[in-house]
Amino acid sequence: MNSKHGRFFCRYPFKHAQVTPNDPAMPCCRFNHHFLDKRDKGNITDFANMFTDIREKMTNNEYVAGCWKCYEDEKNGNFSMRHESFELWDNDDVEFTGMEIVVGRLCNLRCVTCDSDWSNKWDSDSKDMGMNIRDKYVNEYDLDNIDVGIFKNIQFIKVTGGEPFLHRQFLNLIKRLALSGDAEHIDIEIFTNCTFYPAKLDETALLKFRRVDISLSVDALDEQFEYLRKGADWIKSEQIFVQWLEQHNNKNSPVNVAVAATVGILNVLYIYDLIHYFRGQHGLNVMLQTVFDPKHLGIKAYPDWVKDRLEYMVEAQFLQFHKKAEKFDKYHKKIRGMLKRTGSNASVEDLRKDIDKLARIRGDDPNATFDRLWKLLKL
Ligand code: SF4
Image (cartoon, rainbow, N blue to C red; front, side):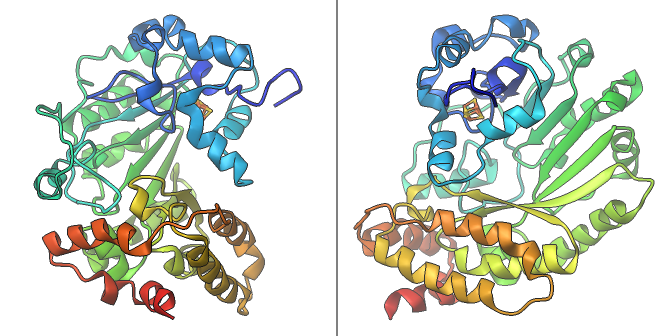
């Protein structure tokens, strides 16, 4: 970032598109699609003529409503995806070099922060919760009909879902890119729920990519993991994790493993354990993302007295002795940012209603599973 870039400028809309089966393409995953202008919409085969309104606003240093999550991250003193865009690209030219593919909504899990837009397994819970769900979903992005020619300048692809390894067309794309030779100039990052390891043929194709980043969506260990990632079994996921870890530790493999954890009200007091296990014990990077939606699972909406108590506990966790404590500093700082007072005096009882409603539908017990949290709030 330099002085010619205003505080609203970002390189994502100039370099990157996120494609999804049920919505128009967007510049990135943080952008709120409700704010796309008709001049922003288009086909990725004509990248130069997409995101026109966003690009104009950014060039004129105007506020871009769809980017509010990045602005919020920055307000909390955190590194945003907008900041990251200046590390990923060194110029402002319009050039299609990065892609995020939301491969579809086929999934085997019903994570609490998810909904029917991202997991077909959520459909019954969504109806029981009275949530809005679309009349008709496209479950899988039509990758079979994308000409691999559009990948000729692509340097990196981020893959999210649903669960990518459940999508046949995504697995076909990996094999097509391996065969065309494009895989060799592409870094691929796959967000997977840690319940799948690819079959032999798919693994062989994957290992042809220049770099393979496997981001495991794990936000807690043991029973808290199974609650947040409903349908998963911690023991089985740990076995899958070990298979990925073997690739990570193999010097001849392009695979790097990291953990992508979403941090919200339920798991904030369990994040230290997660970091301890993945960072401290296995030396892996852990990425912490703030939960904003649904509101009752994010920390921000809760009253300041809740944030104060959580901060007290988080400080106690991070200040305990650990021989690799300095490796935890950045996480400590990030969580502190999430616990900053916001002036909210919302009612915990009101916010808990939807947590309890979903728990009743699923036969879960949040009081027992997240006892550290609720005991602290009862003091
Ligand atoms: S500012 Fe954030 S939300 Fe907006 S395009 Fe950049 S990365 Fe995406």
